[in-house]
Length: 481
Image (cartoon, rainbow, N blue to C red; front, top):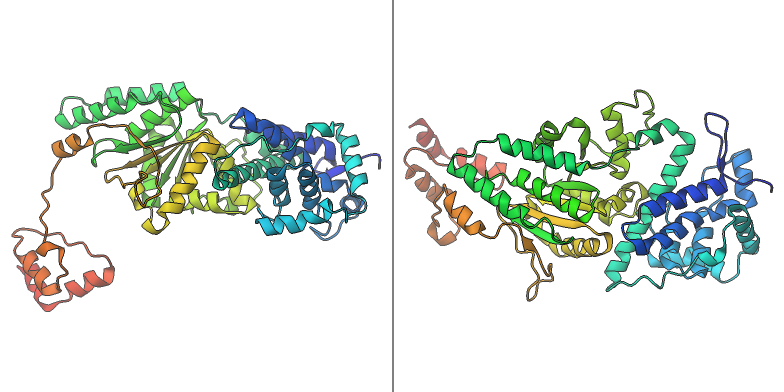
């Protein structure tokens, strides 16, 4: 054939050249490298991902039409990558449409290409090399990549998969929807301006009371540790001592020092997200803060035509939910971890933008204890592979450090070194253990409520328990009095 195409005609009647698409995807992929050592394999993955589209059957499908997916093509690039011993690239390419495969599925998909069972495989490769004008000796194996564990290698594959999916979809979008593609350009974290804006906010706050002095002291301590390399950090502050803004002040300066690109704030509940996002929008402006949770889900906007009024902030945010290319992101714990553990292209697309970021886990104690170990394992490997810093924020810091019989994080650097003093100075409540923490009935609980004089607060685990207590005959007398 004289010409090969990757996609059908766009609204201007132009077909997408296959060589153009391969090189565009290659360039996007290389630009997403969070480490210099990753660039070559990212380029290789982007270049080879649609090698299977050089099949005559696929080119005929573009011209004559047919059932979507009737001419599979991903396994061809995956098979060639496997022959070249670029295993990580092969796995990512194999799943860039259907989802990241497990080891057995990948071997099954690529085995025919390595065993010589595909008769026209050599001619397809020759067409690819001739059309793209590449030197296939540049497609090297990935044995130069060194990982300290199989978990780290898996994280790298997930990162590579995310890079490929986003790069492929961006190139495709550029062909079919130039307006939408243009809307994505220019959203970089303006660190110096944001630091100055936040400093202005701090300068306008009152400083005379003891609580304000404590806030300033805590922030001063945290800012002494902004120059440290990427790693794990903790910020433990009593409620009301400015944890949100202190963590942000540290994150901005830490990002500047380590040349990081964005700040991701992860929270357990949507109502807290709304509150945090509103504070950030009031400080920096609506256009710099993206909320991504059940109200801003990528699937909701995936198939919408968003070219109309494409200059609006709302439209920019809709498409940013797809790949998290945004300066400040506020999201839920579920959204964050479901994306990291998923194998679906749409969910994983954003994962590579967790690289080169500061991730702030606020209210980190809310992570369910039954998933703590796999969660910490994931975070350790993400931090190592993807050049990410994690900050754990809470008023009740959980024990995430590595210790005997607990495979936690080896080193977590506290940003405030005298948190116990701060808790003592802000102490408002005196705790008393009731009946040695032995289980009690409603009758004993009622005695305690009556004995509390003016008021009592009782917290139940469930609504049913609260209603059962309220419905007791004697409790009404207490309320009446």
